[in-house]
Image (cartoon, rainbow, N blue to C red; front, side):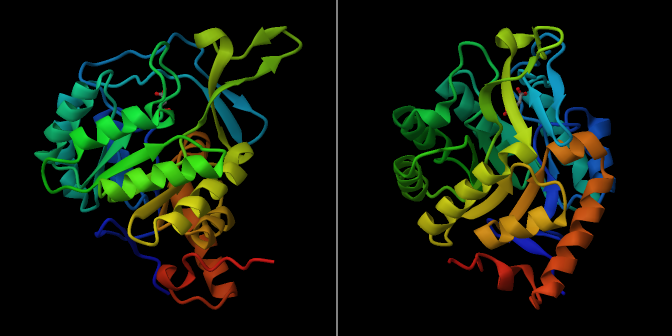
Length: 309
Ligand code: SIN
């Protein structure tokens, strides 16, 4: 059974790794991912300057397996992650940098800086919903074009985009055209569903503090939206762009569903936040069981093999 895969030509020893978000901000957290069964070390989205993020409480559980959060990109500043990316090489797995600028120039500075780092893949976060006054650039296709023309022109490391969820086929069409025009190597879809509201009726209160309680929703609740986005991009990008599926993957069966929809690998956010590093092992085992059940001998063989009624 071959459960190794690749993203943009970079080999991954398994289908499952962490998503930028939970427990990947400090060197200690990243080293723990290095020692875990996560097939890559995806670092927290970094900005030019260190950030403390939004006021607390900024994360809350929603039901059993979902979260609402408005972290506000707490991170140590990009220079630290350049340093970490080199130190993390000792774990022998790909390191993924994730970057977000407050201006297009900042995005460009960050993307260029990581070209000279230990990172194997550079994920441009075009979809953080949690910064007041900073729109999700992934929803502004004109700005996306400007962004892509700046970040794609330097260096040889694969550039990818962390995308917000789209809900209309025309948006998948426009985004796919841009991705193909600028030779984006991979996408990670989807980020949390931005600006959702959870209310505690007993306290008559929001459950997180920033932005009047608005935050990104992740976990089981968003899996159908994530699957639809993976399927839509898989169909449109005709196998030429690798896809990280992200959104509500809680077990190996969920991971298998993303494989059927066309994802080359999956990133785990909410389950990792709730369960810790053990999630990578049990998801891998569950995925193997599903592949065996369907008589697939590899990830490659099963990719995109969704039956339509
Ligand atoms: C955050 O730090 O606010 C979450 C990151 C993201 O949604 O991209």
